[in-house]
Length: 235
Image 1 (cartoon, helix red, strand yellow):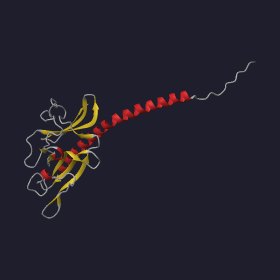
Image 2 (tube, helix red, strand yellow; image 1 turned 30 degrees about the horizontal axis):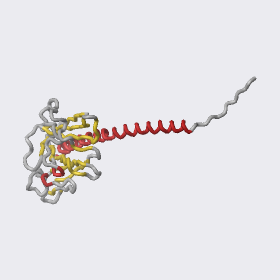
Image 3 (cartoon, helix red, strand yellow; image 1 turned 90 degrees about the horizontal axis):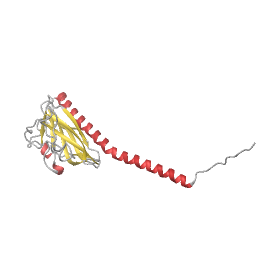
Image 4 (cartoon, helix red, strand yellow; image 1 turned 120 degrees about the horizontal axis):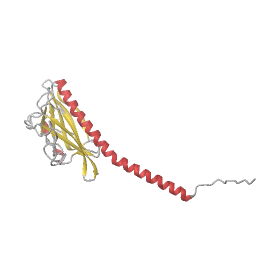
């Protein structure tokens, strides 16, 4: 009977190079997908956090009876090499938007922060929380949801064509505020003085990643009469 023996066959250098090349291509594709997915995830997370801050501020106003303001500073650099800071400020003295007050919105420093005391030396105006946008996420774009964009009722009278519909100023001085009162209603300010006469306000966030010709945009709208919130996606 004839018997055949099989000799062990090793891997050739060419075969090894082909395998390594395939692994490198797969790794590059996976890395590219992760890189593209990260800004989207950061944007979604930031929008959720922004909405949560607004909701918590409204709840704090309902519980405490004090005005609680969500201060928006689109052009301020935070502590994590990012651009855009949000400060939640409880205005127990009800004078934060009076330019004659020792601590007031028009001159408020979102980096140094600080609060205000009553006549007895107790802090009645104080920072509850701060939030910096993550790197790669900013307030924007400048046209918000788009020049011709509009929301369905009951948010249809709220402007959505800028990154912050109630903010005023430019650069690091640009700022705006949403203030919830003890009944949960919202007022909007771009500076000191009386509130803006508006039905509500909107804040847009965008990621620094191009998706063709359509930017990644998330927006939160707030009604004045009830302080209710609505999130909108554009991508």
